[in-house]
Amino acid sequence: MPSMGSLVKLGAALAFNPMTMVKDALALVRRTAILIVCALIAGLIVLRAIGCLMAALWIFVQERLGPFWAAIITAAAMLLLAIIVLLIGILQSKAGKKKQT
Image 1 (spheres, rainbow, N blue to C red):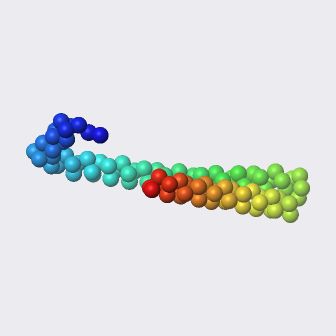
Image 2 (cartoon, rainbow, N blue to C red):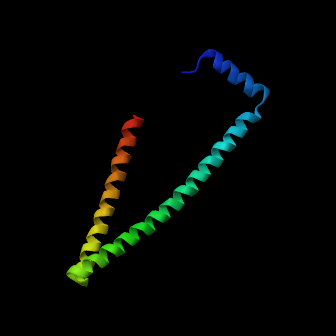
Image 3 (cartoon, rainbow, N blue to C red):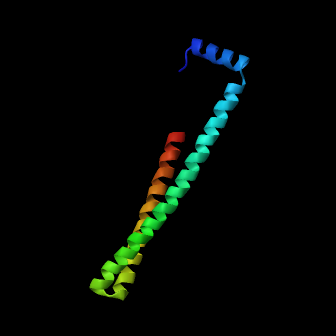
C-alpha cells in the first residue's frame, strides 16, 4: 500500500506534467504489442516443431511396424497432445475463476 507521501508526489508529478502518464501508457502499449507479436511468432515456431516431431515419429514407427501402424500411433500421439493442451486450458480457466472471487 502506497504511503501518503508517495501519493502526494505522484499527484504533484501528474499535476505539473500530465504527459508522463501518457508516455508511460504508450510505453506499456508498445511493450504489450511487442510481447503479443513475439508470442505469435513463437507459437508458429512451436507448431512447426510439433509437425517435425510427428513426422519423425511417423518415420520411426513406419520402419518398424509399417505404414498402417505409423498412421495410428502418430494420430494417437496428436490426440494425446491435444487432450493435454485442453486439460491445461481447463485447469487454468478454473484457477482464474478461483482467484477472482
